[in-house]
Each structure stands twice: as structure tokens, then as C-alpha cells.
Image (cartoon, rainbow, N blue to C red; front, side, top):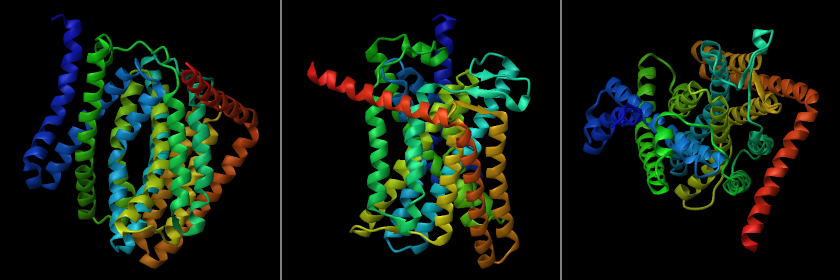
Length: 441
């Protein structure tokens, strides 16, 4: 076997090898006897390996299906543990645990804000850093001002931005009813289903030249290629689903040992752990000078979390309850949803010109971290009642700040908004038209 072929296979087997300690211990039940540190280490390494397998599967699939659809599948699998955690809390709420509903909303809003505050900003900064270090990413544009250097994004993400705008606008109204109910489910899940129907009807684009494992698998006949993609998706999905929750709970236990409040752990540390496959996959893509593909994956993840994740909570709650019900939450969680929607609105305003600069990334990161750190300070230094009252005021203040910044940006980017609407409309018309032509044939 030539070294050219052997190298991708070595990488592939290496990725699988990272997952074997966890999968074998999980299948045999040995993992039940692991201590906290061992659980975190073994499951964490498995998540790393699964993330590589997932990325290779998505890149290989781009040869046969629309890239946006391949990335959407990657995004759903990568954030599946987040769905599992939130579904668990929604189920417990249906069984009579009043606090579980608040935990479901806290975990969901934490995950969404992490995805933008750390994910979008971090990947942009990492892309620009990699371009400086290696000088091989055509998607990174340098300027005379270092803070003005930016990642240039694919204009094909106009559709995702448009759907995210629609979901974000609707999210502002969710807290007004005091809970998540059937209307929220119909609108948000409906938006995601409509998005999937559009992208799955798109044409298969001319793919970028791949290297390593994806290039090796794409060179194989369709049958072998399709089987490999399904195997990579299925195996990595199983690993992510089984390993991320113990990884997150292990981190929670470690945090509690050091005196970090449980509610704070559930809102921030657990979602950060459950988002780790997505962050690893996007960092991998950036490392291959595919910054636009990385951002496409992050935006797709945000879209499915901001629609499916919120929309299905009421479904799980109602099934657990044994009848239709509205997943009610308190004033604090209403404020959490509003700041999450406002942050999403601001991030989308940044992306409407298909760019994200160092300056914009730092603003996203600093706003996110400053709010979380300040709230943690309240929790650690005040009584529970005082901390909650001040936290609500803090969340409302940041919501207003995000909205003011958003209005300021959009006021100067009206032409870009029209471009987004035009490109999205064209994509939808092409998808509907393409389906009509296929039906006529």
C-alpha cells in the first residue's frame, strides 16, 4: 500500500482508536465504576475522536448531496447531546419538578449564547490567527488596521441568516406568554422544516478539493462512499450521544467540588461541554483553511438550536405530562430568552455583509464574557434573592445594549439586508422551481 493511501487510513484508524476506550467501557458497563476524573478524561477523548469522524463524514458527503444539507446533518449530530439534556429537564418538569422547567430554559439559553459568544467569535479570531500563522486561507482578508481584518463568508449563507432572523424576531415574543407552548412549537419547528426542505432540493455544488480522509473516501465508488458516510455519521452520533452527557456531568461534579453553584453549572458549564463536538469540528475545518465551511456549520447549529431545540421542549413536556401543556418558566428565564434573542439579533446584524472582523468578534466575546462574569459575581457575593434581582436587571440592561448596537448596525447596512432578502428569495424560488420541474418530468 502506498504512503499516499496509507496516511488517510492511519488518520481514520487513529480517530477510531480515540473512541475505543469509551465505547468498550460503555458497552461492557465498566464506565459505571469510573471516578469523576476518569469519566471526564475517557469520555472527553472519545468526543474528540467522534468530532473528527463527524467532520470527515460531512466533508465526504459534500460530493453527493448539497453542502448545506451535509453541514445541517453535521450540526444536528454535533449538538444532539444538548437536545438530550434539555429534553431530560422538560420531561422532569412534566413529572412535577417545578424547577426543571427553569433548568431546561437556562440550559437552552446558555447553549445558544455560548455558540455565538464563544463559537462565532472564537472561530473568527482563530481563522484570522491561522491565516497570519500559515498565510493559506483565502477567506481571511487583511487590512491596514489589524482590528479591521475579517473573515469573508460565503454568500450562500444568506438563506440561513434569513431563517435565523425570522426565528429571532419570533423568539422575542415567546416570554410574553410565560411559557413555551404549541404556537411556539408550530412556528419554530415549522421554520426549520421549511429550511431543510429548501436546502435538500438544492443542487450539488462543485466541491472544494479535499485532502486526507475525505479525499480518500471521495475517490471510492458511490456505494463504498455512501456506506462510509453513513457509518461515520452513525458511529460518531452514537459516541456523541453516549459520551457527551457523562463528560458534561463529570465537569459539573468537578465544579461543584470547587463551590460553583449548581444552577450556574447547568446554564454554562454543561452546555459548553455539550457544544464541544461542534467547536472541535469547526476548529478542524479552520485548520484546513475552510473558514467559510466552519461558519456555515456554526450558523446551521445556531439555527437548529434556536428553532428545533426550543420548539420541541413543549412536545417533550406534554408527552411527559400525559396531555397538552405549556412549559412555564419564571421571570429570570424570560429575561434569559430576551438577552439570547438580542445577542442573536446583534450577531446576525454583524454577518449581513458576509464578513466578521476582529473588532466585531472581540465585541461579541467581551459582551458575552462580561455578562457571565458579572452574574457569577452576583451569585458568589449576594443572597440568593438579591443575586436573582440584580441578575434580572443585568440581563435586561445587556438586552437593551445588544438591541441598540443592532439598530445602529442595521441602519448603516440597509443595502446588505436587501441583498440577504434577494439571495434568500432566489434560493427558495430555485428550490420550489426545481421541485416543480422534477414533478413535471
